[in-house]
Image (cartoon, rainbow, N blue to C red; front, side, top):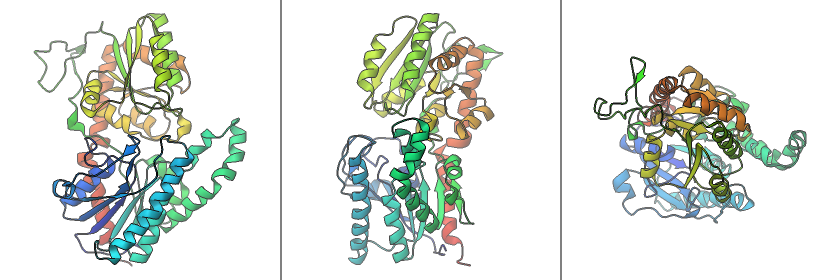
Length: 441
């Protein structure tokens, strides 16, 4: 049962993955939440790994993090890993859970840290929130498990063989992890999630009457200017007549600018992207498909992109710093959500950025995101794995610029309503505070 605590609170955030202060703006999920909570006077400590998941490099914290951000960042030593799917990564997660628990116990015993009132731990990995659960029980703290992925079910797609064989092998390889997750969520005092879909995928997350809350990953909407508007159903191409914060629409004859951002790994629909580019070139449809990101498939993607000739071009930019990344999205018309549904991702970070930039979405994911796209008239869907389906979706937007601009406005409305961190993270903080205001009865 969750415990009533007076405000302000001592709050621990346990997440080894997100970028920390000093690693680039804007703040992502846990940095954003830590800022909001610290601004309300809470004593916030973020426990994270000393190895950067995104950059695959050692990390350190700036000396003045507490003074500049209002919260503390404590690094937990872990072994490095270079592949997102590897035994080395699983070993690094074990390091994180064990070392975090030891350091937390030592810090409280020595008086360096106060007992936390709330521990919010991200899932995945399992080891961090499991250690947090043991600490919460011993220290009489409220435990909040924050769902960031469907873990370990996402690993099923990586098993060899046809689907029936993967289904048979999954319990043998990952059944123990599923049992551990069930026990963890049953022990939690409250459950938060970055998507409704993750709650729906885990029955134990919605069992009982424990508090639950959904806060999407979100975006910093003011980082992007709004998309161009239609005036009397005619695109406004007069830059001088457009508001200063509103870009002018591109001429109808300009190539359609599309962008995919994210990891270049097997879970992304990159073969369909290349196939679509070849089809569009053969059809004489002018489009530029930008790719911003890095991963094991970057080199092969560059090679394939260079071989594509004709009206459609593929430009591979690699991993961009935030400034060039924002500039690229601001110059595009369409955001490509090239994520295979079997990855079980619900609403990825890239979608929040795309909608903040007012990009019409070409989406492969069913469920929650598909419903958002429909409700806000923010884009079109395509069938994952089909280059022909992706090409048709892109061609439909290239051929109807009025419809495209209408969808871009819908996409921006989606960002402002559902993904604006300046709105959603204060509500997340309200919910965390409300847990501690509730009485034990």
